[in-house]
Length: 327
Image (cartoon, rainbow, N blue to C red; front, side, top):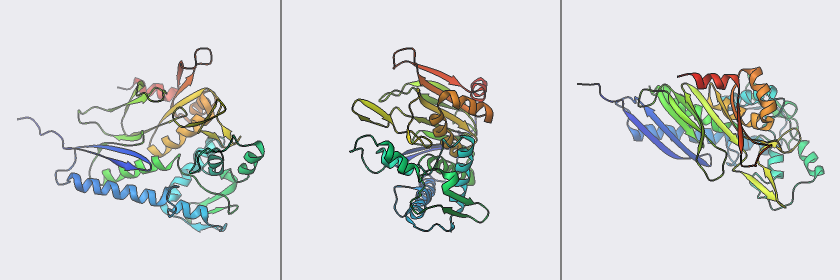
């Protein structure tokens, strides 16, 4: 008689304004689906209670509305996320910035809808006065305290909290004795071990076409996180001009280069999430330079400047090319 097939549990649900999907392979026999689902939901609820900018009672929201500029104690998870955010901010020359909330709101990509015209240069300058996490925020990881330079400074974790949540769920699965899994939230994911066929997880990177689900590239993942950031699904139009929801925190304006999608493979989903945003702001030219300098696995899809705007060109960093060659 052959070996019993590994116990597989699949879970799905809603979180962080999107959906999650989990496949766990080799689940311990005494762990039932309802118990695992409850554990996952509890982890996600905890992450949202700390990181959600849409929950007015979350830890980050309370920090944002506080007028206190003296250091305040923050949770260990908040320290972890802010430490990672500071690292990506520094290595991306400020293109990743968690204080860009005033710009998101100004351009109509936050809770306010884009009723107004494109912001004036004066309005952008006014918003930029409270943007720049290296200058506007001060983190002391050892003391677990965080301060801001002015009451108006806030933190938006939308480009890194999802990745942290994925990693938090993955850590819970590991703690429950599950070594082979794929955890995906809103298209970003982490994969560990192997799938139910005993092979590495194969993940498709989509073509940047709104309303379509065609695959541009397939990558095998084992013990890695993958995140994609694109400007092709979330944008506003004003007087015939399309404005990306990806805002350059240095200029205060949406990106204007030809790169439309960036996928990053990293050791965990949190860093992949943050770097995908940073690389999309940088664009393929500067992004490739940064990827090579940091040995990062990055895949760029850009509109072809020399052809019809529906045509695309792809570029990959050396580390990403190496991933494609692995079996």
